[in-house]
Image (cartoon, rainbow, N blue to C red; front, side, top):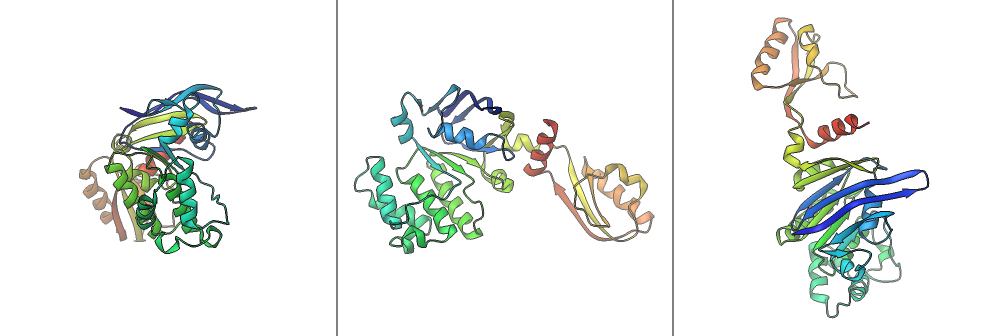
Length: 302
């Protein structure tokens, strides 16, 4: 079953084409990544899915419910964690979550509210006013608000931006549990290691268009081979190895990254270094990751 169906979305703000025909089909129970540079159209897309904005053309269905023509049911199916920290400062954490439950017509929801607070480590802040919370705690409360009605589709827009390692760990444990229970997760993040570890499939946006869409594994395989990272203590890289250098930027003197397509290339490279009397201070064999894929794809579509 398709949990989130996005059909040819178009959105323009005067001279800016924010979305230029985005189409996606995200399956029920999928952990889906939506990646792209700033200005790619991710937030515009999420705003349209959430009903906060209207597309110029195209449609969005959440579990079969159109976000415009059947907006009440569509909203019931969806929980969104926005980037912005927006709260009413005159209510406590528990009061905020009870009000959020009321927006969805849920009464006697305290058991689930307690469970959400416990899993997000908010229990000891239940009676604290939101204005007294730290930035990290406010981020947790945003997540709790999005989950209070147990939505089958959950959209996380930069949920760990600027937060500590502890929150990331507790958040991903809870979100991972919900995903295993059948909830569909859509994640946007600039932490590509999170996307690589969590997402089954990934779509990459640039200038309002989908420029890549595939499983995480298949996207990473687009980068052939591995890398040999070297730090030389003494000597210079032999001329025979310079054609293998991968430009990485911000490299210190004596540091090189070589592209290798097969493990059999490692020993000849080391032999060439030994023959010229180079002393190796450090050596690491690195595999391609999602960040490298992202940089390559964004460069290809420039």
